Image 1: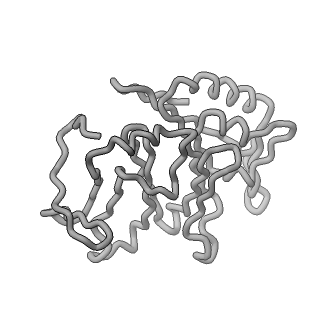
Image 2: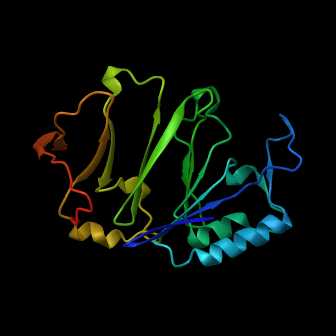
Length: 211
């Protein structure tokens, strides 16, 4: 468990090491395991995370491949987590590029294909406690694939979690905010809404107080 403290709040990261001990090879390592000791630790971490602005859980294994005898892992995650980040299944045959779901317990489970073979990576941003993310593939990024863009405000409505985010802040919002990266010099960031140009973005200052 790691707490990242800022002047405006605290953000918590809880790791779930469900790997079996001793470690075993494929195909026997397809499932993870929550032991009694690990369950006790996770319950303690969850209690400590209640005052955090946002809490993120992460593990190698999706919750669907974790064995937790007599223990409801998803319910525990749902008490505090905005998102649960995981991998493991590696986008088999490229048939599942977007492995995302909202679990009934009220958190996003966001699986990402592997870095080892596929070179997939994820960028996550927290903007006024609203969480956005973008997934990308490193070795297939040609010149036409840049820049890599993550719009943090307004966030993608498909991933809104009113029970875990202050979505009412969107009503008071006055700015469109964008994170952009490129291997080439970014000279201008233009903004269009529904195909209509509305203006050019300006670089934000550090700790910009805009909403």
